[in-house]
Image (cartoon, rainbow, N blue to C red; front, side, top):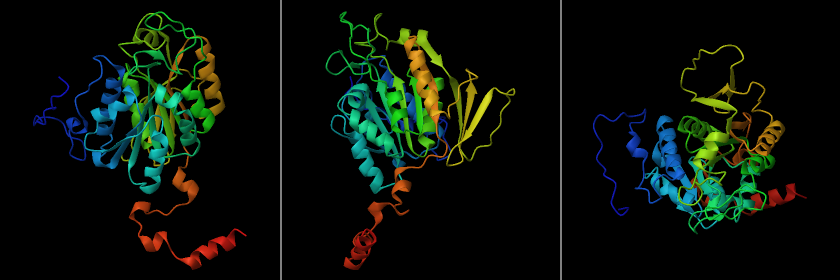
Length: 351
């Protein structure tokens, strides 16, 4: 019954945020994914995060590639800008849009096939360039649209629904993001909304390349006993390094915690990420240690979740290129083509 339109009626008692929107205003079309798909839980977390942040839907640009994950932007923020690119090319299209209009909030949604296979090079470059975006990877370890083949993130030794064993080493997008220079790196689980919503809120506020690898079980092809991306496996092997509270700049910051139990990190825009440490020796500001920590626990069969790395002094691509403050798409011919004299001056400076 996915052809049915979602009712537009709003109950008058629905709570509104500071900009006058209800949570329903952040929803999209009715999902066509399998019932129980982890991707729908991620869509719900995005809706909740944007509503709590008081983000006006028309200020968001959501882009995706190809795959089950890349269908999901149709299911949230129905009143935002959207673009569905070709397979694996979401990062480059998003980069172009961001360079043209820096005033929008950019949300890239991808999957393990879209990002870790055909789009692997694009994923790496958007991280190292520091594009100001939130990059969500909905990671289920299989190609759901083509009926359950292993993806590049499937763990070595894991088994398919039909019993085949994966003999290839997996690509860990969290480790790759750390190596390539992402300044906000986290891993979440679609079945843990209390952890995932604050992670998305903090990523949306981050100034720079923010990536969250979200384990999202495929209920149709990868939720059986031999899978390491199933609901049961992730719940049993989840190693959460921290729990996160996120406070926008405008909110008063209050807390009642004992000494040594909380780490606060103030971000570029004045917002605060408060980490309630579950592992007292874990430092989210140490990129090298984060890489080692993830690999050490992966070798034990443990899935590390939480905020793994945060650079609070990060800068984005516009700062690196020293572009003008005005969005490039608002500039006229006189500003974009200043004439021969200006060109000669630029050429002379390069001699």
